[in-house]
Structure formats: C-alpha cells, structure tokens
Image 1 (cartoon, rainbow over the protein chains, first blue to last red):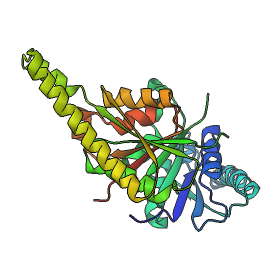
Image 2: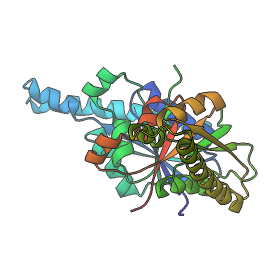
Image 3: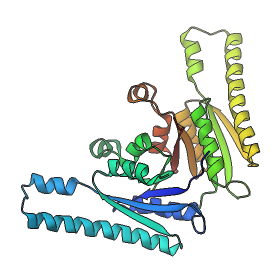
Image 4: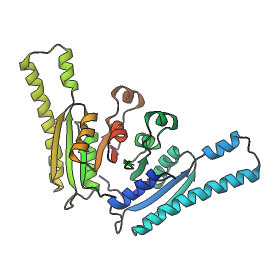
Length: 153
Length: 153
C-alpha cells in the first residue's frame, strides 16, 4: 500500500470549505511531515457564462469580470495560505478556471494527489438536486480517496 | 476544532472494505497514538428477509441462518483484527444486525466516532442505482467526516 505523499484540499468561498482545510490542519499532523499540501480553487465558469447569456460581449466588460473573478480566487487562496501559515504548514496553491467538479478531478490526476479533502455544503435534497454536489461527484469520480468534512451546524 | 479521537472503519466481506482498513493502517499512524480504532460490521437483514420471503418459518432453520450469518461476521472481524495486529494497532470490533447504512450511521452517534472510513465498491451507474451505495449514503448522512477509499483497479 503506497503511503499518502500529497494531500489536496479543494476550497471555494464557503465556510464549509475553510472548515475542511482547518480539519486537515488540525488532524493530519502535516507540520514537519514529508506529506505535501496543495490547496486548489476552481474559478467557476458560471460567472463567464452568465455574462455571455446577458449579452456581454464588450472586451472591456469581460476583462473586468475576469479580473474580479481572479481577485476573488486570490482572496480565497490568500485566506487558505494564512490558515496554513498559522500552523507552520507549507502549502502550494493552485487555481484553475472551469467547472469545479472537473477541475478538482483533473487536478488530482495532474498533480498526482493521494487524498482529496473537501467540505460538504450539507444542502438538503432539493438544493442538491438543483446545484448538484461537488463533493458527491468527487467521491464517485476522483481517482484517489476522498475525505468529506462537515461543518458542525 | 476538536481533534479526531476515534476512527471507525466499516467493513463487509468485500476486498474494497479490507482495502479501506489497510489504507487506514498504512496512513493514519495509529500505532502508539491516542486515537482509538473501531472496526464495524453490519450483518445485513437481507439474508433474514430472503429466508422469510422463501417461507422459512422453522425455528431450527432460522437458527441455522442466524448462526451462519454470525460466523461470517466473526470471520470478517477476525480478518480485520489480524490486519490490525500485524501493525501493532489495538482495535475494538463491533457487530450489529441490520441495514449497513443505518447501522453505520447509528454506530457513529452511539460510539461518538470522529471519522468514518469506508471503501467504495466502485459500482457503475446502473448497479449503483439498484444496490444503492452505502458509502454515498454515509457521506450524506453521517454526522462526522467520511473518508471514502477506492481499491486500485
């Protein structure tokens, strides 16, 4: 059995995803270990698609949207880095534009991740049916073990 | 953030569930730690229900079925114990009669488990629709984080 060498935590702007990172930092004894940690964020295409649907074709407006999206992503990863720094854990951050489901599963393959940690939004059945569940998708499709954390209610 | 103090691995007679236990033993550095390990097995009601459906009402026959079921459960847990012994990890084994989905989630509450580890059978979409997925159910309903392992194909 190959040991875990690389752990990836997938984060978005939700509290549950930062709880997932906090869980990993509190429980996996990463400080001083030879396990490397990656924090991954996908910049969802939904924003770009919405802009296109609303007929936004002006290059200037699209550039503004792209910049805003990048700033949000940078803020999310900066918060993650800060959380890791507080625990003296070195972290690599990776950001991709695209559907989070595919982005996470592709990153697992590309970065050779041995364990994915992801927070569950804890949606009810109805909301889950509409929004889908990124965590559920990853449990089914990721090529590595997946740990789903839950934010205490 | 409360640290993980008790980890439960759910096992059945499948290779994927023994792979889940092996994963835990290889990766969680349980030897010498103060984290306690529970291995849980649910004796599915399906066997009893099938007997009832086939019109088996003889107390002798039912006793034979119950005994066989218990022996299977004991063999599964004995294998798990042996795997833990090889890694010098102390383990508590728990067995319940009932639906594995409910049995696992109830045991998490009752035993105050902080992390569930369960193997994914990796069924295709069709088989999953028929059999349901215990791991998926637990990801959605267990009150603690759930780690789903996958047996390398």
